[in-house]
Image 1 (cartoon, one colour):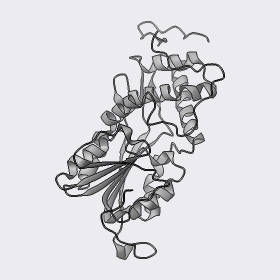
Image 2: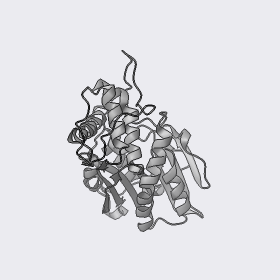
Image 3: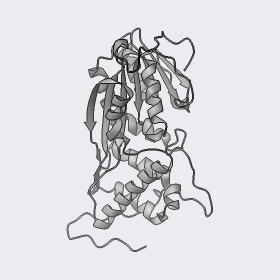
Image 4: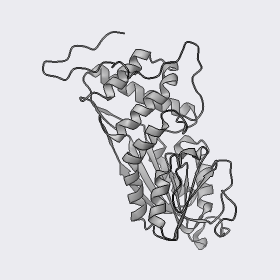
Length: 311
């Protein structure tokens, strides 16, 4: 691989791979991992969840607070990851409220007062009907090919008037704003394109964020509200920490898709370089409410009470 072109006089030096910071390399012939793009139990997931909490929890919880989430409410979070949103919800609904946090791998969710943790697959496992005042799903449904069916199940899980909040990125465009060289900028954009392609190959939709509002309306939710956010990816920001996690986690698949080990090392050095800056895609925080029974499309829904069986 050829080196970087010389930097102009006075410009910051272009990034180089730093010893001890190389991304993981697969041995010859070792298979790349398949399936869900970001595994909740990967070696990198603790750092990933920490970055998510610092970057996104203030946005997620502020939108819930503005919608009137209050003490005494009963809440569900699906795909709860490490549980930071669920614990934040538990604080908002105390005293008297409850939060059920579910995930297919819930082992990283720490206990908290008012919080119940369950192993649950929202695609295949049942949910109680008309049981919750609030349902939250952040960065979950864009990974599921069955996302529209899941939205119908979440609608039925809410009590009439109950609130659903979906937070999803539109990763269709994540522009590089600053890089030491044009070659660096092109390499970064090639990486973001490859990451989106890998997500599609696993059944996800990296651009689904822009379609969340319409999906909620088409499912039957009313009172649709949208808050868009864009975050800066620059050294020291949690949004860049997320991108570095993506690079490390996807390294075997990126190697399979045509990147060289040296290019992956160069990407990591680039993202840590003080002359680098990029934007996330737009985070769409979208809310909708289950309509009252007399406005329910197709007839009156079956009502229910607080569940007596676990989701």
